[in-house]
Image (cartoon, rainbow, N blue to C red; front, side, top):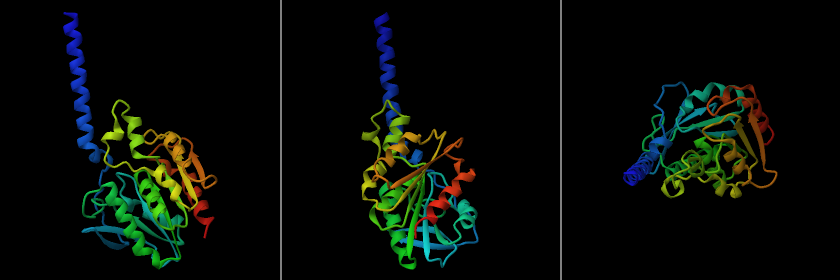
Length: 258
């Protein structure tokens, strides 16, 4: 009887484990990407055509000599950065990128698709400016790091970044072989060596989504002396931008280089 009970428990565990693995595999992109809706706004827009998709980029403060491209988080409506960005980066033309499926852009997001769109956006706008800087938050930190590894940028700010999405997912789901299952790895640490721009990393002390250890591991992949780091005390993953230190740190960083 006891042996039969143990066998039943073992079978249940195996089935539950397999069901969890299948669920994670099939739903992984729904977990990684949470497209935001399109919001009406008063700002200029740039319709970027790439790989049969139309990407709607919001343009703030056009006509400045310096540009900043912003890549947001996995569920972020980038339009809501417009007012604080205009206030704090008034000498930049700012491009808020809406990913495929986000903010009225067509298509569905994938790692390679978002990389391709980032390159296309840079290539379209950089000739209009003397310098282009990048800022990437959370999911967007991987896209910004990739772009900085492929194109010349003035400086690179990474907000709550990761070494790779694969490693972060492994932290959250330690019982599964995530590296073998995940489709979109976003391996920023692998690309860091090809980035020549100065880098700022901002972490949130109580970040449970992307633990600080992953940001620190990413920082170690850049060249020695290339990275400055700030850890905003008391902040979490989603609310660190409400802290005064957030924008003051970014303004010092972007004002330090031509």
